Length: 346
Image (tube, rainbow, N blue to C red; front, side, top):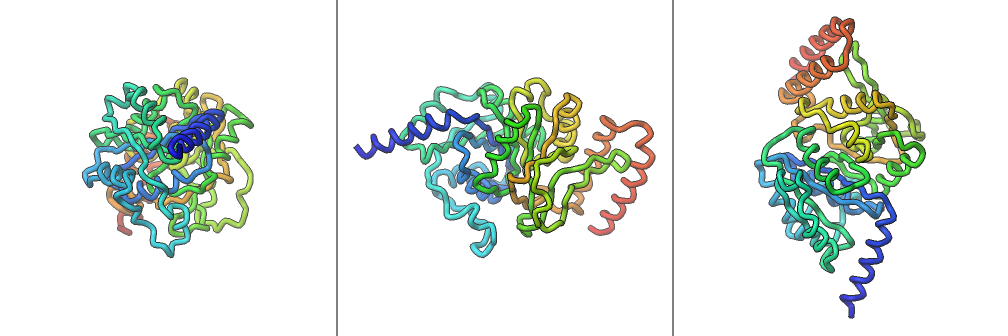
C-alpha cells in the first residue's frame, strides 16, 4: 500500500510537470567530475518542475563517467566545496539517491536514444523525486561546440521545448530557471541568459551582459568585478550572453542551426548570438536568474598557454567571419599587445 501511495504521488507530480515547457539542461564534462557532481547536486534542487538533466562527457581520461555514475547510485558524495564556503548550501546536503540514469554513446544519442527504455525508467517507482539522468559519452574531446551539439541533437530528436547550456563548473540558485522561462512569455523571439557571479567571490559579478568590439576583437563583460548592489535589476538587451547559462527554444535552433564546431573553445556563444541577431531575435540578460562560475576550471586560468592558444585561434576565426576589412589593422595591434602582456605574465 505504501508503495502504491508513493507511486500515485509521483504520478501526480509528473502530470503537473507536464503543464510546463520541458527543458533539456545540457552539462558538458571534460575531466571535471568533481565540478560536475557539485553542479548536479545544485541543479537537482531547482524548483522548475519539468526538466531533464543531460551530462555529455567529452572523452574524459580521468574516469569522470564512472565517478558520476557512482554519485548517481549514492556511492560517491560531492567533494566540494568546504562546509564553510558561502555557496555550500546550493549543493548540500546531498539530494536523495539513487538517481536512475541511462547511458548512451554518441551514435545512440544522436539517433534519439531509446525512448521506450526512458519511458520505462521514468515511470519506475524507483525514480527519486521524479529525477533521472541521461549520460552521453561522445568518445572524444569535441570541444565546447561539438560536445554540446551532440546533446542538442539528442534534445531536438526528443521534442524538448528548450535547451539550456550550463557549464559544469557552476552552481545555481533553486529558482534560476523560472525567470529564464518567464522571459519568453514577454517575447518569444529571444535567447536568454543568467547573471553570473564568481564562485570564489559570491557577491562579485563576472557577467551582467556582454559587448562586442570588432576594433579590438574583444567581447568585454558588463559589470565585471563589480560588487552587486542591485545595479543590474532589470532585464536588458545584450550583444551576447555567456555560454555558461544560455537558454534558447528548440524550434529556433531548428531554423538557425547548431553551434559552429570550428570554434573548439571560446567565442562559440558570441558567434551564435550574432547569428541570432541577424535572424531578427534579441539577446536578453535576466538578472533574476543567478549562477556562480568557477571560471576556466577546465583549461586553467586565462594566462595559461592552453587559454592563449585557443582564445587567439578563436578570435581570429571570429574576426574572419564577422569583421570588416577596416577592423583588421586595429585588431592586430590589440591582439599583439594583449598576447605579449599575457605571455610575459605567465
